[in-house]
Image (cartoon, rainbow, N blue to C red; front, side, top):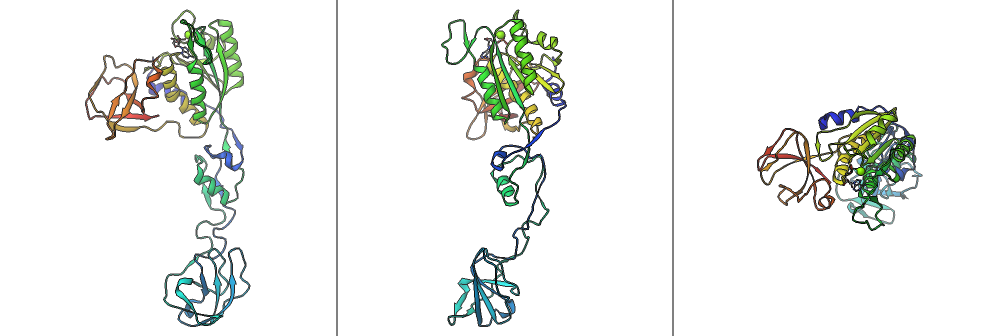
Length: 390
Ligand code: AMP
Ligand code: MG
């Protein structure tokens, strides 16, 4: 049995070539940039009026000036501003040549149809050419997780098809003669396939692409065929069930027989001890325990960091430190425990009602998992624990 940290290190030590693809701008939402994005324009592209007003020479600010034209946004000025003259200008319009000052309309009064005077000397309302961005400036860096703010920046610099990292494909196989799909009412000896669907959902939440291969019987032949097909077609293969010590737990043997090099088959975590991980070339196989809380937790703590890494993201998911509401103790401490918890309004951590690794009903009512480190048996009220929020 290896520690959780060692298991994570072995998973992340995996070699693969991150592949990238060009996608339409809006389809890059939630993806990771695989290139730097440079601006193809200056922003603003000209000296721009920041307010409706008059473009003048600053030295003329105390004089009565003759208005020579009106410049709308989107329009090019047709005349140079000489001393003694002004152009009426709208917000966003280019400042005409010769003018070095824009004064807002509120501080102007028309002295005649074509003449104007100003009541004050405020700050200049010209936004200089390229104040925000210059041609060639890097506006977004490779590795950036793209949200709406980055979409706006890419749109503004003409990047309509950004290069992003490819989403890995994740194959999902549920094993077990007793497993039936959700639409079937299980007989007393059967159990519904919660794991398969949970793993599909977790895969989508991690921005990877699930391939669901359905339920496979507990025979060597069927399981062998399914795993072989899974590694031939997907980047990562998840198999749930069949990794314990039972007579029909074939997964580790089949991984061996398919030359999938097993890196570990017991991890000091609770839940999820029998988790098995192997590699074949640049394909990765996880044998996850059948109990649904175990399979949920193992995906979050081992599979999702690998997907993150393949997507070009930082692998480990964030945790926060919060104080315990009550003393905590456990009988054995050889494993790192992940326990469902709730957080009170004053940010104290309470352990949630939890009956063990089959108790999936505990998870929707909890707000996160507290991580109790290996070799820690007791924690006192008020001590800080790491919490991974759902
Ligand atoms: P196993 O790892 O195959 O020994 O399974 C351990 C426990 O998890 C057994 O009680 C199984 O019935 C249950 N189990 C296995 N696969 C699933 C699944 N896909 N969905 C829900 N429970 C499962
Ligand atoms: Mg089984």
